[in-house]
Image (tube, rainbow, N blue to C red; front, side, top):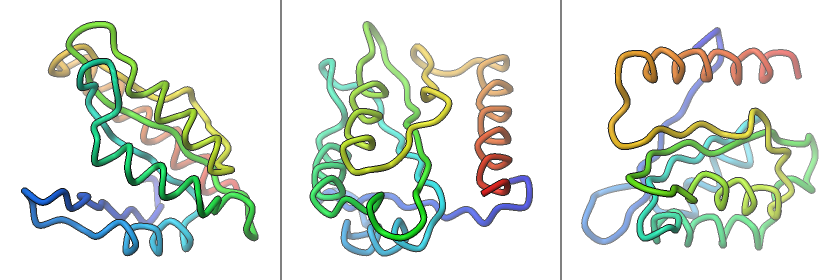
Length: 130
């Protein structure tokens, strides 16, 4: 991704073998940027992601050392809400929200996938410029 090292972490939620949130936080502390993905579930961030963001907010990694940038992305089937809520929780964790996030209605079509790709490239360029 534009010469930027990317780590993808699937949060453990009891149904999936994922990464424990404390291990994800270790990745966050070592990163320059944090992107959080969540679909909207009943007008809210997915509970597993909300729990992680609450944990992250308590640690406030944005106050330590180099400021971090980040944003949320996701999909929704109605009014949305998860991306905006996740962005607010990132801000509360001291992370500078960039790009305003990225969201699509239902499944992304070819144009939306192309926009998502460009969104990722834009974030990567901002990471490289830090």
